[in-house]
Amino acid sequence: MSFQEIFAQHQWQEISQQIYDKTETDVLFALQKKGKRDLEDFMALLSPAAEPFLEEMAVLSQRITQRRFGKVIQMYIPLYLSNECQNICTYCGFSLTNPIKRLTLTPEEVLSEVDIIKGYGFDHVLLVTGESTHVDVSYFKETLQLIRPFFSHISMEVQPLEETEYRQLIGEGLNTVYIYQETYGSLYDSYHPKGRKRNFEYRLETPDRLGKAGIHKIGLGCLLGLDDWRTDSWFTGLHLDYLEKQYWKTKFSISFPRIRPATGCIEPKVTLTNHQMVQLICAYRLFNENVELSLSTRETENFRNHVVTLGITSMSAGSKTDPGGYSLHQEALEQFTIEDNRSPQEIASILQSSGYEPVWKDWDMAMDMTA
Image 1 (tube, helix red, strand yellow):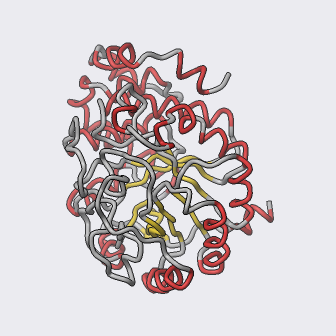
Image 2 (cartoon, helix red, strand yellow):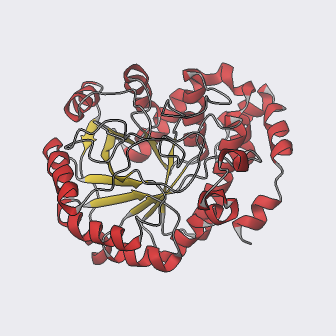
């Protein structure tokens, strides 16, 4: 059964009601469960009824994470290649209607960015663009060929592509693709009034195309603030559960992006408190012991310092969200503002003082070739 068919069997309002109807008994059952927790348990852990059990969830989440991943944090940094975009997304600074300067990096500019990023010590880079036909597979291939000698792990967060196109990029050294549905609810259309991104079903099917193409890792997530975060997160868990069973050779990652201020953008429909974000992170860890959990510089210094030990396995540092942000120092180009402006070295020092090891490289394409 395809995910489209599975998704169609679950109505947003019904799932939301089930989450909010969960009781203390349901939460205790999920917490005390000895075997693998299922989607019903995940509902309970996401529910308002679980909020009084945050300390118990955090202790268990930390224990599970350290047992599975050790006390290490994978370090990565985004490299924005372009802010050209043909979508209108009401929450994004790159939206077509925003009067910002547009820029797509040339090969020389890309190498200037790489030079600075390598100076920070990174070996894992995330390539990011807006969604534009001008920044296409040919551009991605050329960029991968250009930077592949400098990085052992290359990720992408770009427009959805076809399976054959993903296969081409994997052949050029692409390891991971992050594809966020943004929201699984009926408000999706209102947030995307124009552009290819308006096609909900095509975006929903993207992780399947990635799995069939044989990608090393797929990153999922919803944009926290567009709709009820508990319900959106449950649907993300449903998607993860399906993909793990369907593409069992692939690794998976969950990210927790909150809406951040940006030029011409809406205010969040809903907000999460920091306590609720901790609940969400711990709920994912208790639901899935193997999934990687990633936290970006959208979050504050204080929050990142405290939550990193509770279930997170990867973090960005020193991030710029505009093309050429590390070397060109352009203005009014960024996708959104960040909260944690500390340098990679400062982040590494904080991790070490907490007893964690910042890992700049933990995987290489040669490992797959050897296998």
